[in-house]
Image 1 (cartoon, helix red, strand yellow):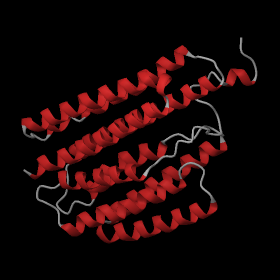
Image 2 (spheres, rainbow, N blue to C red; image 1 turned 90 degrees about the vertical axis):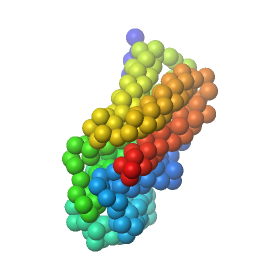
Image 3 (tube, helix red, strand yellow; image 1 turned 90 degrees about the horizontal axis):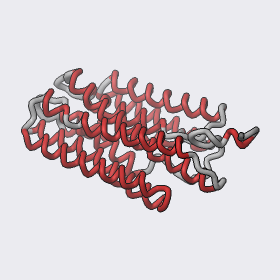
Length: 278
């Protein structure tokens, strides 16, 4: 039987502080989420949006993403000031294009800030809530900037794809944290290992399946289905192999999974936007 502090090690991931050195989000992640937003803007329009609207979607939402990135984790006072300044600029920039979009951005910022404060007070390991909030809101931000209106059904599908992907991505990182913690204390937790692996794979499968839904709901060309299916197979294969190799290879396996995951997310939304333009 484990007692005292040893019992705490049976958690799925360790408590504060985070010693993994994982820094999220990266510039590449923010770029992918900006691409997601612009692609959702294009996909939600019956006709092509103007370059001015696309510029507002890119720059305004990009500033908002960076403001959320700065406050995620454990921000210093200077980072918090920069975050507030960037969010203020993003709010006013987006507000000139759409009042609702500006408040959607502000709401996402407040959500990330609240989660950061709560997990700091409870001394829990910094997770990737930023990515879950930002990934889910990105398609909604793009669609809300549509000058020709948008369908709630397709926006719901796009948000579901991004949200499932973000949970799968975060689950893979959580599994790395758990694996490194187990190796550090030279103790194994087979049940927790399988639970975390299964969760990451199930969410990845859900994201891949949801990426096929626009073919049925929006009447896209069969070639979209082929592209989405092929991308999903590559994404699932990379995720499965990476999770299997984490216990042996550690960070290199996770870097490979993260790279493929980001490429998959961006490629799905770009593909969706391209087929809506036809």
